Length: 580
Picture 1 (cartoon, rainbow, N blue to C red):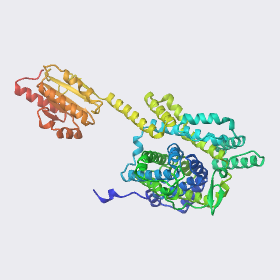
Picture 2 (picture 1 turned 135 degrees about the vertical axis):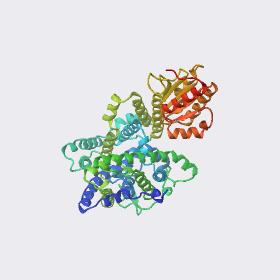
Picture 3 (picture 1 turned 135 degrees about the horizontal axis):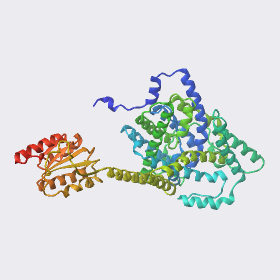
Picture 4 (picture 1 turned 120 degrees about the vertical axis):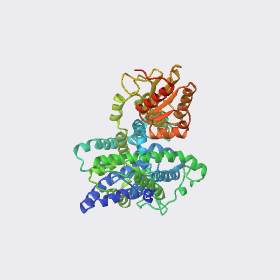
């Protein structure tokens, strides 16, 4: 094997963009697209960080550091990476149990797993996740995110933290008397703007207009002495012994994740037991990050008529998530909505994602103090819109009406498990159910039995002591018994059996064992077996099992004609002439 097969495909998208020609006009398009998507990403990054239980600046740091590294090192020209809504249901419980330090440690572990997947050439991973499973858990995530935003959208008080979805709903219902008029008005105005603005124009990002509308309404209400919860009232930072409202106006700086506080406020105590507890969550984060990033790259390719390198994209995602925790960032992955906006805005290369990260950096340094006035209800309204788009409710309802019943059942189970329990369980159960349904369908396609030789063909003139047995479909553990069960039913008059295997594409170990037992039974009954049309890989398995070196199988024949010639020769040798 040549050394080039071990080449690590870093910077694949960036190299491809420059190799195909990168002009000043391309740079101009990338800069404009990056500015547009950067403006959209700023409030979303803060809102998503709040949704997973950490301060808003950690979402911005994710977009800055993670978005920059992934864009440069990855395999998609257009992917815009940062915090995404898909991770909320996984990361929020981690934050609640292990604090910010545990969350960053999970991100670090997930980055290592993604890097290993990229090095192992697992870029086609998304092809092995059935569509009903993907739709089920993404719709479930959308429902959970929307539920989590009800508190800030209506300004509800004394909700607290709850271990399951039912308790969360009960707490929301109990808190309805504390609804805030100011927060509700701001949230409704922001949400209405998000819905209506794209119908007017797409030249100005609707997220920016909605955020401005909500913020101005919030300021107006506060001047009228109507309370409105703001980001500055919820979050603060300390500088030189002085507490300031909002987020710190500084660029991301180096931190050690395990030195940050856990859920109890004390520095995280990292040991093997903690890593063992965090590993399932890290695996789930890595798998979801890989699926979402590769799906996002496919969507972008469809919009721009390009092709991405899936292995390079996994490497980029892995490196980004390995580095971002050391700068206070949470889990990063490609965001479909932001990527689509970038493509529609004219992006030509990963430079657009780099500009998006730089726009976020400038916003942190120059505008952090203004962010303190952002209404929490406006950020909640933006996430409600994200949840609606993510759930793809119209498509889910359409699939429920027209989809195969078994696939619909998988979708609904994944959705309910995601909402009521967690996404890790939902994906695991969904994959098991989808695999079981696939096995059942493949088994239904497999079978075997005696076939009529007809009045024409190579076996037509042979006596009744010659039987043609045909096997169709893959022979594997769930189908082999069905395919071979009729072999034992032939009467004692059968002396020669031609087993036609031209329609058998594969054979696993379980089928091989059952096939060997069936051939041994035929041999004990004095029936000579001729295997016809055995594919090369199956014949190799039979040879390794020693079947061709024993008397169980008289011949491997490439065609029925050759089997007929061998049988005629044997009949002539024994003094039995073919009929007709």
